[in-house]
Image (cartoon, rainbow, N blue to C red; front, side, top):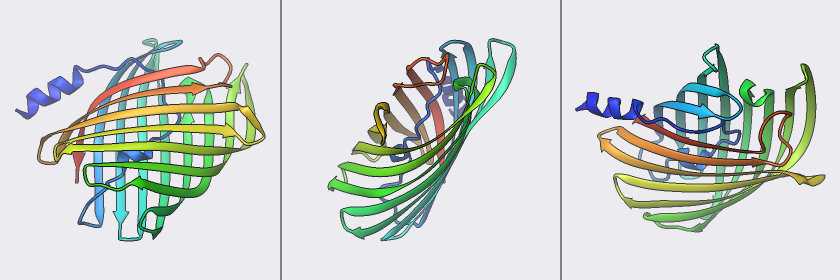
Length: 251
């Protein structure tokens, strides 16, 4: 039976471009009696933007949670083949801490490093903080709003030169989490990230994930992501999208 599921997962391709905003909401473990939680996922993708790309992606997520504290770490690594010529690596590392000082309010601090040669991003570093509000508390559905400020340092390759930028951005997100059953979850999150001193320079990212439990500790996950960047790197489209299917193992 496991072989059938694996064959199905690897036969599911996605039409996409590389996402540049990590949707942490789809990775949180909302209710768990144990303090430690984690999962490992494997995705296969066929990408089409300015190049033809074949991608194998591995994501590892580890979370530690108590009544007031939550720490989570994400390591997202990709191996990509460009136009049947060469392989490149793409990766994101994300560390986040939440302190819940009110039943519906928590304070978040996060740091992130990223490299994405396909999108001409040699390096992007983020450091941010702000409040997170739980608007609708429920075991079957929930609604969250977050408003953060973050410092961004970025190195991009343009015309065979490395261009550096150092900016302060806002990061506002809205997240809707639905749990119609113990085996099914639907999580949709939208981010808006404008530059503080130039509001017309902004990014919008929306991501919706559908997770269906196959059997104990294994689940099928399908995710669609749409990203708009008003000022992308030279030669990169302002709108990119991704549809990814994969198998997830939780521990």
